[in-house]
Length: 247
Image (cartoon, rainbow, N blue to C red; front, side, top):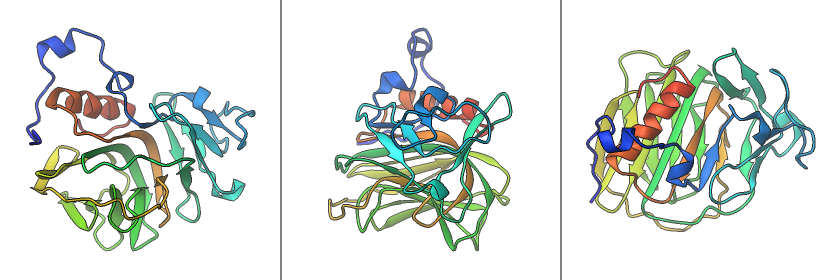
């Protein structure tokens, strides 16, 4: 059974070093770590300055490996304002695909922090590993810019905010197990019955596509388990600090 309550971390958790790495996510994208960013597919030309293209991003998670743009034209750019760091996708053809297979699990968790610059597709994909009935698809609809959709298999959760999210930093977390689905967008929580996911697709895990999104991407994680309440608070606080989103 998944605990969907949300609170600040316990005193015991706050008094010991806890970070994203300690949670052992399978995938961990971290634009703030320039040592994981490269301008070439081989990983020999490092990203050094704001405006550099990011053709390859090394995965800091337990699966290892890396994310790759299929062509130089499809590479997002690294950008920073001196405090925050992000990858900026153009909403036309930019996409980063994980080079490997993400193991299947019916218990799954996704976190991402981003800012929508514009919505140029009916449903702009922030993160996609859904295929036909698999793991999360996080998207924003052009017709409802106040909404974030978090879909597990064929079971979407629509989180509606009070105003357009264009130009707004958001922290999105979504989790599913056989009992419960839950999504949280800047503190707005929507839940439903768990989706019985099936491993019926070999679609790659990718960000900004395949239905291209025009966003600032502050990073994210993927886990094949549902985090505890304290772990969830750590994740949301981390991505609120990485962006301007709400924990």
